[in-house]
Image (cartoon, rainbow, N blue to C red):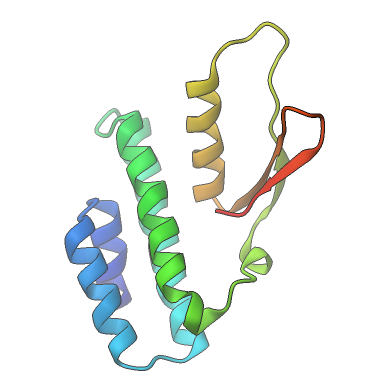
Length: 135
């Protein structure tokens, strides 16, 4: 399979074609290594989405869609690659509110951006415990 196709489908936010390509890939009975290549291709695609956002060509909704697509791809590939993908992450970031700041939408956008960049995001929960996000 040509992994650049996956990267381009993700970067262009072509949801239907991306999911078709993933389903076709899964029908080939791929190895775990091949599945990890597909995840990396999707990660590169989400990185391009971030670059296009920074250039003003994509909007916040596009970032959110890219994150949603990436989660769906990982979910579909879970039988091949397994569920423990934290070893593929770049590091961890703790994300929390600033006192008096009501910018939940901004926090959500930032969280998705850093997840697309390959970080594990740790969000404080309402009761003071930590909620670990592995998207």
